[in-house]
Length: 254
Image 1: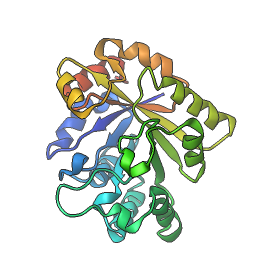
Image 2: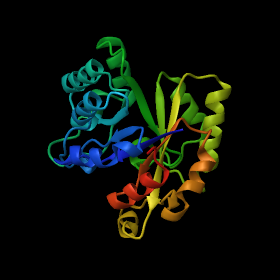
Image 3: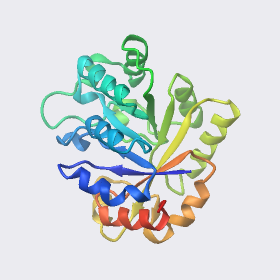
Image 4: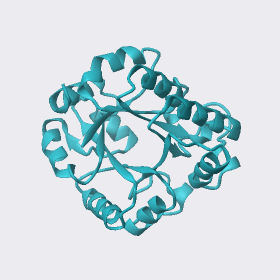
């Protein structure tokens, strides 16, 4: 099972990755989270892939910030350097300007098919986010996605998927999803976010309304439970970088 780190890039992202590179198999990179401008997830991913070609690099790719030309241009850059994957999502609304995603695409699947069929992306895999309980009910028109919903989405042509909001309560959904992918013999890789609760990020998690997957002291035990269900985990502590570093040193590759 691969161990990836959720990298929230700043101007000093190279310093961050140098600090943790020996403990991880790669990075999942955010893309101007919450609509606040930050170094582009795809651009950062291209830099990291050229510096660390053996690492798995899978940036988030927010459609709400990009028109079709920019979507294609960034994806072509990713393909040129051999990024392992782009995770397509409508994403947050931008802090500046208007959201572009719904202007050009009804669904992320439309953007995926545009990149595969029109732009001819060949090397970089395209992935989606899956959540049993979508954060934006008004966007999706439902408070919950069941296993059939998620499997049908994966079957529609995605190369890999990232499971979100993993908790004790949603772990059975991840188990069913993993089993369904195996039974159907889908050639789809499955990763899951593991959100670590720490004393330092308790207020942050409360503010954003996210339930941690597990606590800092129980990470290793929880990872043993998902080993075999997923191809990899993405470690994040929601703003507590020191907590992430502590976890990665405990479970990482060095």
